[in-house]
Amino acid sequence: MNKPNLTNVLEESTIDEFRKNLRGNLFWPGDEGYESSRRIFNAMIDKHPGLIVKIAGVADVITTVNFARDNNLLLAVKGGGHSVAGHALCDGCLMIDLSNMKGIRVDPKEMTVRAEAGIILGELDHETHIHGLATTLGTISVTGIAGLTLYGGIGWLMGRYGLSCDNLISADIVTADGRFITASNTENQDLFWGIRGGGGNFGIVTSFEYKVYPISQVLAGLILWPFDKVKEVLNLYKEFTRKEPDGLGTIFAVATLPNGIQVAGMAVCYSGDIEDGKKLLAPLREFGSPIADTIGPMPYNKAQQMLNETAPSGKLNYWKSGYLKELSEKVVDTIISYSKDKPSPITMVHIWSQHGKANKIKIEETAFSNRNHQYNFHIVSIWEDSSGSEKNLQWSRTFWKAMEPFMTNQIYLNFTGSEEESKIKAAYGENYEKLVALKNKYDPTNLFRMNQNIKPSKM
Image 1 (cartoon, rainbow, N blue to C red):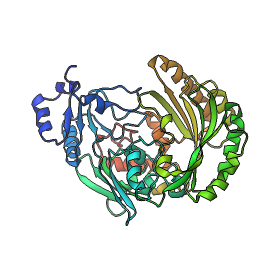
Image 2 (cartoon, rainbow, N blue to C red; image 1 turned 90 degrees about the vertical axis):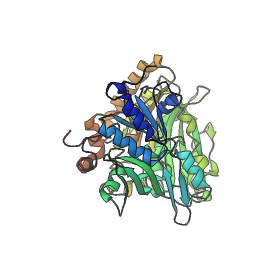
Image 3 (cartoon, helix red, strand yellow; image 1 turned 135 degrees about the vertical axis):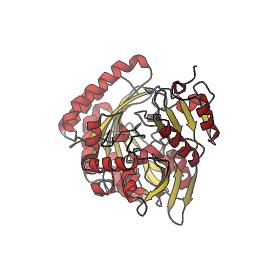
């Protein structure tokens, strides 16, 4: 492969000097390590950065940010590489790969955990679980903590403890001018507000400190019914989640089993007393004639892995997501109509119940503004081969268009691809102008724009 096109704007001597100032590795296209660093879970995104810095520590982040800014280079940042939008990649740019930043420290006495930005959920769960502790993270253990937290972070514990961003105590950040600062309720409070939902728009977070809670054993698992019961199951889900306790997390899904049988199902995780949970979940488990019921007591870190097979890496993905105004009969009928004809067996339809503390926090307390609606609707289109892309994309977009009349104007940015500015503005609602002011202060030239971008007012 030819040298990256960055050599069209930079002297090789300049790049060589940059390399000398790094403790980590600098990869050209064709170098050993380049392909693995540029790989992300969504195979729809296939781009080739001009250079990749495999970060070894904070000093490398500062050096790379300064180099990108001083040389007017497009900069992309990869944490866990699990963003469906693929913002970690861009053609010909300078890419920061944080995946080697793996430090974790649990403090059982203070009930906190600090984790560096290359950590994925399963790694954090592994360290906290040995102490009988946990915090709200997502539900797929190969997801990176960085993007998850910066855009909100919905998960099994959100009803009881709030979103991932709600449990953030502090964060270390490298800003566009190369400063290394801490954001918390006592330092740089404006930035701390902004990174709890505002994404990577204001700097590169190198470590996150979270609250943790005494969670060890949970009651969790899946219940599956035949697809011809999907209407009854959705109505059951609607009635059940109206009075859902804070300690319970639930997801409705339409999926296809490996044997080709299409099913309607629910995934559940109850973090309270196991016997109380059995009584609570009895109406679900006794409904109809489930074809499978895997619910039982299990370690929380194992519950965090029970959906991993639904998110295979290296497949082609296209997602659409938003909040339902209500789970009405027309919504149910539309979901059934499109789900029965989904073109790929590994495509799924999800509805998440976002409730409890996640929705009790006032909108103005954090940048994350989606606090008023319970049901997060999610089309998860996944297919094997690019020859099927046109068919799968058309189905997804047509389905989404049919659902739009039932949606609010807000979207969950972790569950969606690259969005136009108007959609991002709507996603933040009344918080958007405050986020623009924050962008003006911390990144006025929009160095950090490979994200769900909040543009500074002068751009």
